[in-house]
Length: 309
Ligand SMILES: Cc1cc2nc3c(=O)[nH]c(=O)nc-3n(C[C@H](O)[C@H](O)[C@H](O)COP(=O)(O)O)c2cc1C
Image (cartoon, rainbow, N blue to C red; front, side, top):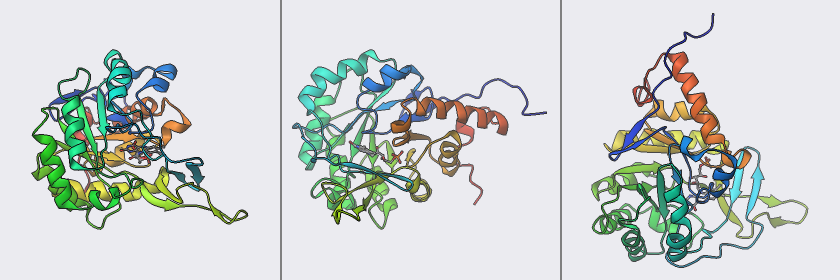
């Protein structure tokens, strides 16, 4: 018997007025600006490429060791290593412009002024379809306090909103006791979408050396371990805001992606799974398509928010 043979389901989604070929994007920091993806696979099959966070000044990141494997995920304390906005515009943006995929540029700052300046510099640049504000990285001094304070988020998003017409996605931290309040603050200040979640603060210990496994002692936990936390965050956020939500956390196959869409995410990002296979997001899009065909759902947008709860 097997599933009925019908037309392939439509995977297109529209977020903030921008159309994406699929709802499966890469997550920031796990696909650089596309160089590896380009080498191993066809980037035009990605829903979007989300770049590594770029800051105003170059950042060297934390010393090694800065990644470590855990039972069902990984810890990292990369520390937002990047070449800074000048080098990004001169060297990385041309690749994004050449690649036939949507590009989401992720920015990170130490202060609201930094975010505003970064958004100004990127406004009107070809090849920047959306800006994602990383307001959530737990590895940066002060980041954890700022990113879990709704009033700071509101001020930051409002500041950025005044200097750019590019649609804004606000990426939230799960290291808070009220992620929905953070999303509401972002929406009220003019965000076009919310993405959640960034990594959870975690730690691993070397039992023979009696030392932390990461140079920075603590780091960000990602991968399958965080999927239930991420699903619950998306569940809470979609009930609190009207703008689209992009789910992130532990997605490793098409059924994981489907779960986020059912809960109400309009798209998802894939991070840690890319370290196993650079073509993970493309495989996941195919698996999602197979699932939709089996479920006899014609368009992926018809799955969004179908949770019966
Ligand atoms: C090695 C590594 C580097 C990351 N760097 C960034 C970053 O620069 N900016 C950012 O917003 N998120 C960064 N993240 C967080 C991911 O984008 C994502 O939110 C998180 O890993 C959860 O998704 P996953 O479980 O699919 O990996 C990074 C994650 C990893 C594993």
